Length: 149
Image 1 (cartoon, rainbow, N blue to C red):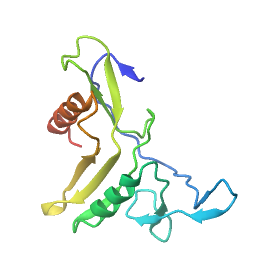
Image 2: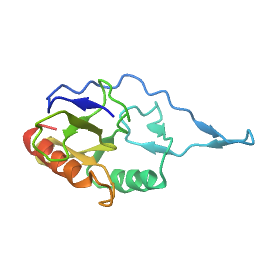
Image 3: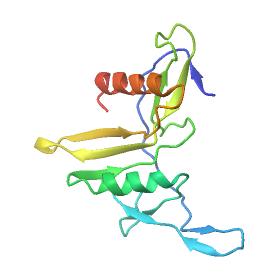
Image 4: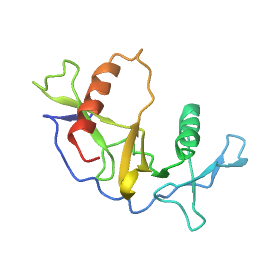
């Protein structure tokens, strides 16, 4: 589990490369083309990005979010702490009196707002049945309210 002594504001690094396979190799050695989506920050020259999905709902989220009329681009946040991963600290008792946990949100999506401003949305669709769901939701809300993200 990743930990920090409390919330820290850092600059999110721009991802420089996104080596992604174009196909999935199955157990029987057959290859299946991966779905490709537009508007990813690391899209190829043709404007598409192959996406390896860990969960079926991820594809549904991408399709829904990039279909929004003012959608600009999206990013699959790394699952481990890296300079290019968006991380938010959370604590079960929400007082940060000891080490806080770190979460990496699934998807930042970016949309165009009025006056050509860009706004970000953090999409982390997880169920409330998880013990840490409410502390994570509170921390994302606090992060969004305090940051320029």
